[in-house]
Amino acid sequence: MDALKDIEKPYAEAERIAPLVRRVLARNPSPFTFTGTQTYIVGDGPEVAVIDPGPADPEHLDAMLAAVGDAKVVAICCTHTHRDHSPAAAPLKALTGAPIVGCAPLTLDDDGPRADAAFDPDYRPDRVLADGETISGQGWTLEAVSTPGHTSNHVCFALRETGAVFTGDHVMGWSTSVVSPPDGDMTDYLASLQKLYEREQDTVYFPAHGPAVEKPRQLVRGMIGHRRQRERQILRQIEGGNHTVAAMVPQMYKGVDERLWPAAGRSVLAHLLDLERRDLVTHQDDIWSLRAPDA
Image 1 (cartoon, rainbow, N blue to C red):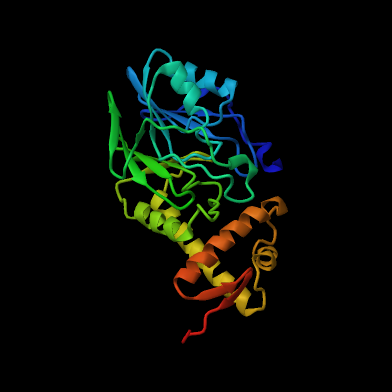
Image 2: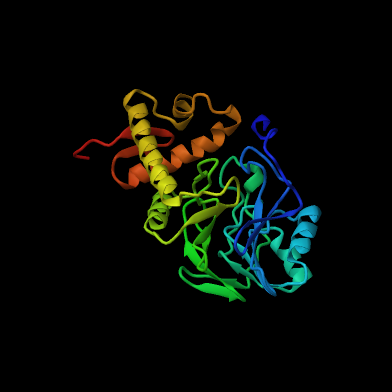
């Protein structure tokens, strides 16, 4: 967390960051959430939407309500149901009467060693948005862009009026996303990255954690390249005699905070499962090996 000490963290106050968009930062910093969860208020008129209401923290709820002011909340939108994103949806609905819309419900005990982001078992949407469906208020329209991978229920929201996309945890400017099986899926994640790359109309990404992404297609292209590089790294690790995730991670993540190694191991496992689907590797228990060409 030392890397955060010199970064400005305007907790519990609304910041104007773009046309139609204000941001409220939750006080839940961690190695996985960076400075905290960024909740976005969309709309400048009498109707607004709230995207990723975040943790059910009283200070954060008060800050969201202050940002909304006299406007009517017509939608509470969640990109996915990790605990740093959706728990405040229910109390915000109770306070405003707004429907919860967006991603589908999903409850698992855990999706890997990421204690701050286990799934929210209490998430109950009033409406699940399919890919391409929209919600709107005065002066704004949000389109659901289905992006499974980080989680199977992940969805981004595109603001049609400005070209901004709220990318949740799928694309972040400060870090790559954790893709943790069994729910996280590297095959789906890469397909979702490609889907975003092909959206030439998007001008800026507002992630749930970290700074805005001003050159979104450039970043996504680099992220796809990074994942392909990781694939090659994993294949070289197996060729070199490291046949378990536990043996690969210290070699692949030298210089990375060791507290993040368990989560990194989940992404390595996700890559291995993707490589297995493509008949490049096989495994018995925790031991991975290259698949013979004629196997």
